[in-house]
Image (cartoon, rainbow, N blue to C red; front, side):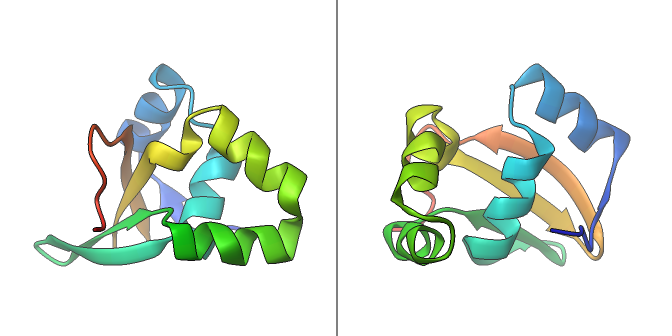
Length: 95
């Protein structure tokens, strides 16, 4: 899966510090739902609906791995063509 986003130094540092692999970042952007994060940025996160799409594409076992390693709670913030940061949400981003 080729990335259409550049990863800022901050995003790389946060990804490493929070143990969120860049492959998971790309999956969240590709399959997750998005909302406005302000100042032209977008926030992406995996929801029940997006996990269903991921299961159909990659299989049930792959989706279980995403959920088992807490990556289901991760989110990504992009601005333009840049991944700005990645983190874990303490509560659901989408209701």
